[in-house]
Image 1 (tube, rainbow, N blue to C red):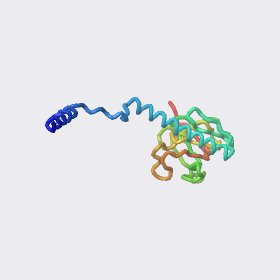
Image 2 (image 1 turned 120 degrees about the horizontal axis):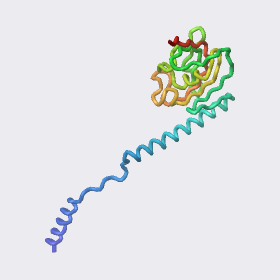
Image 3 (image 1 turned 30 degrees about the horizontal axis):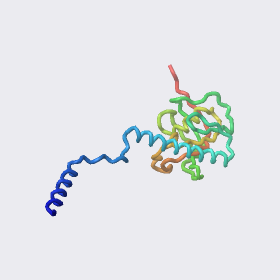
Length: 179
């Protein structure tokens, strides 16, 4: 009888070793991973949008929301006639804050910030807002992270995934000469 049990055990053991292992069921394929990341991104954008709306409400800013999610409110109208476009040089005075009120950067009319629109020297949200302004305008811009410095921040004063508030004045637009 003992021989029979030993033989049966060996047969059972050898036959079970020949079975192919079943793949784990918790591994995502590429399509399900894409859907998962898209859902996570939608949740993040929705949460940030609510936070921005609360910020705007708390400060009683009169703003409009653009298709990209930028909130812009021009609170002092200038006498300029032209809005800057891509490749125009702009001169601005501004203060850049995190939504918790932390001042990150400041440029005033004595030491303004100069750059050309569309050349990557500023955030996309700031550039979009400036292109809706004319010389002399002052505006509130509330910039979602995807129009600011994204998931990485600027490596200095703006942390990762930060929405920003700009209080900006468009001092001058230098329109380049075109042939």
